[in-house]
Length: 158
Image (cartoon, rainbow, N blue to C red; front, side, top):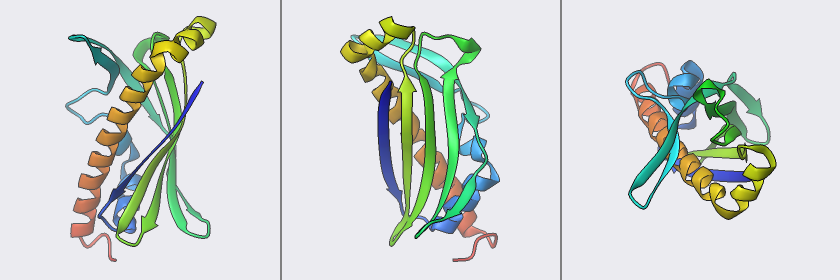
């Protein structure tokens, strides 16, 4: 099992980002209508990838010392194929002075049991790390676009 934490900052209001995420979390965390989400890696001119399914939980707004919006996300290979890692994470939005911090924190389980764990230490963690990083960049971009639309409408007031 590997753990990860990725963060990015977006120059959009927290409320706009939180409303965009709450309005359609699957559109932010999952593939768009004309695309599929794929996890994989390219090495030595070869691409090994697998289409994945994204399960999205309910968005919660939590009042801690600072208000945050959070949603659980699980990613697994389509059809239950265990040739790729399972991802279990939480996406969290936190207001900052200049916008919103987006954080994806969680763990991934290597495929194929004990053999997969052994291979993970040697190679597979790189595949998981690269796949999770690409996925996170796509999520941040989708969230940025959706939040900018929300911020430009009367639906969100600063």
